[in-house]
Length: 76
Image: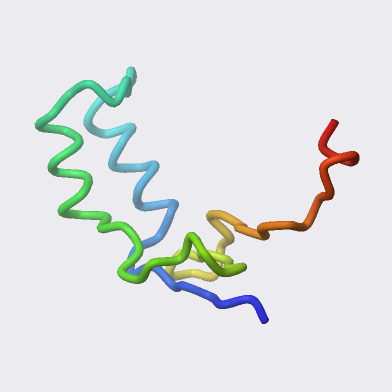
């Protein structure tokens, strides 16, 4: 079974906020990163050990995590 984590924010709003604040987002601006974490908090549950899908508030898929989906030979 795949769990679904729904974020409280929209990826469209996230991108708009990035564009409004800075055209060059490097991940090195501590003030910007702190503000983004406050406005767009990460998942609230631990998801790294089970198959899951993370969606935004509009249902847009942000990430799939499907461990073991591809065998070692397929990955090579």
